[in-house]
Length: 226
Image 1 (cartoon, rainbow, N blue to C red):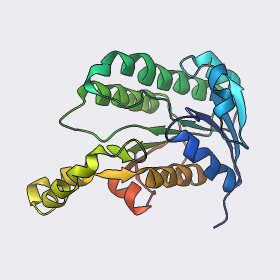
Image 2 (image 1 turned 45 degrees about the vertical axis):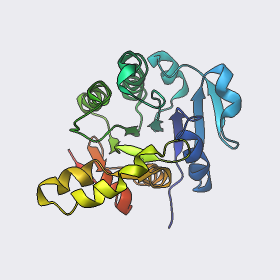
Image 3 (image 1 turned 90 degrees about the vertical axis):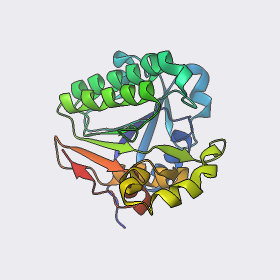
Image 4 (image 1 turned 45 degrees about the horizontal axis):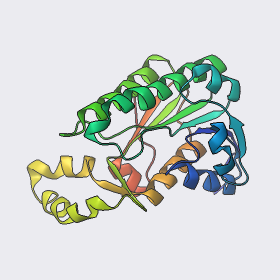
């Protein structure tokens, strides 16, 4: 596959997804920079350029962003849970608000955002923060890809494996099948692949593409376009 090399700025590049995504982007020939706080800059994967800054501040993101960049936004509260509602506002929502503002001002070519499957019966505060991030993107007239996983399995993130028999049963019940697919589990490898494919293949200009759980699993990332 021939991939057009792109200039990519990653926020959250030292985290659970970012630390795995950056090496893949570099392998595909992309030029990668990672925005990180000073204490975290040394943990940016080798081959990417670390840029010191604060992903919660639009001015800091804007300073690191160039016109035509792909901005991959991966900042979020680690191990989200019901007790972390304040963090979802302070970190998750504040950071995507900063990225949207910076992308709109800099003329970013493509914003890639990890949201969450919606609707869902639990984690109301987390879902609302991520849904508000989607609304901000939609209101800014950006070219964007929004990925909607429910839970991403990987090292340190495996407790939902116990639910797999229940997912299998729900898929056999017609009234539960859609929810079981939409709220299904994906692996960290599937997520990294989906993110890399999104960078490789942007949607049409000024449109927002949604990639849900079935598409993440299948590696089919044409997605639905709003």
